[in-house]
Amino acid sequence: MNVTLLRDGTPGRQLITAIAIATLTMLLVGCPATKEPSPSAISGHVRVRGSNTFGEELAPRLIAEYRRTRTNVAINLESKGSGSGFAALLAGECDVAAASRAPTNQELAEFRARGMELNDYLIGYYGVAVIVNASNSVDSLTKDQVKAIFTGAARNWKEVGGPDSAIHVYIRDPVSGTNLGFRELATDTRPYAKEAKQFTSYHELAEAVGRDAGGVGYSSMRLQAKGVRSVRIGRTEANYLTVNEGWYPYARTLHLYTNKATETPAARDFAQFVQRDPGQKILEDLGFVRRFEKRLRSAVPD
Figure 1 (cartoon, rainbow, N blue to C red):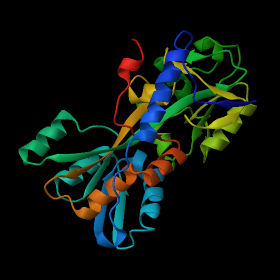
Figure 2 (cartoon, rainbow, N blue to C red; figure 1 turned 90 degrees about the vertical axis):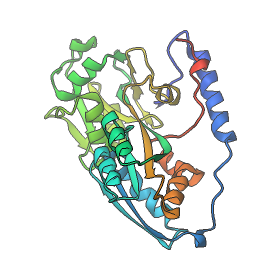
Figure 3 (cartoon, one colour; figure 1 turned 120 degrees about the vertical axis):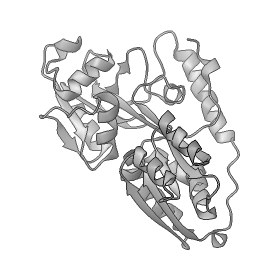
Figure 4 (cartoon, helix red, strand yellow; figure 1 turned 30 degrees about the vertical axis):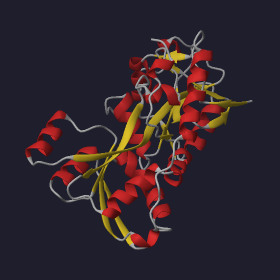
C-alpha cells in the first residue's frame, strides 16, 4: 500500500486541518502571479551568496530554468551558509543573499548602521518529515528522542516507546543540503550515528526504510513511498499548514534578500522568477513547500 507522508492531522483535528489545507490550496491557486517582464529586457550579472539549503540542490535547478529564457543574465552562486550571504550583502560583495533564516538582531543592527534597507523575497519553506517503517508502533517522537535516534544515543526502539528491536538510521549523503539542514535542526549539529546509511535521494532512502522494520529516516513531506509513514513530533504533524504556522520544528523559511538601494533589475527579476509558478514548481519537485503570503492561524484552534 502506498502511504503519503503528508498526513491530515491528529485525531479530533482532522476535519478542521483538512479544511485549512484546502483553504490554503485555494489561496495558492487563486493568488495572481507576478507579471513577468520581457526576457530581452533583462541583462546583467547576479552574484548569489548564502544558504546551503538553498544552494546545494535547489539553486542550480532554479538558475538553469531561469537562464532558459534569460540568456543575457549570468548568475554566480556560492553557498557557505546564511550568515555568509548576509555578510556578503553587507560588504557589497553580492547582489542576492539566500537565507534559510531571518537576519539576527546583530545583523539587522549592522545593516541599519550602514543605512541599508533590505528587500525580502519569501520564496518558500524547507520542511523534513521523520519517517519510519509502516509496521513500527511508534507514531510520535519528542525532539529529544529524534536527536537521540539520529546521533546514535538511542539504539533500540524500546528506548523511545517502541518495540524491542534495533534502530537503523538512514540519512541523505553529505552532498545534499538536507544532510546538513536536518542535522542543524534536529541534532544541534551533532554528528549522525556512525552506522547511519547514506542515500543520494529521498526516494531511495524511503524505499530502504520501507524494507526495514527497524528503519528510520527523513524525507520531503510530499514523497509517496510504499511501506513507510511519517511520525508526529510531539503532537505536531508534518504538513504544509504546520510548516507555515511555525508549529513544525524541522522546517525553515527560505528568503532571498537584496539591498533596496542597489538592487539591480536582474537581481529583482531572478528573485521574482523564483516566486512565480515556474520557480515554485521546481521547489515542489525537490520536496520544498511553495510560498504563500496569507497565514491561516485563525483556521486551526490552539
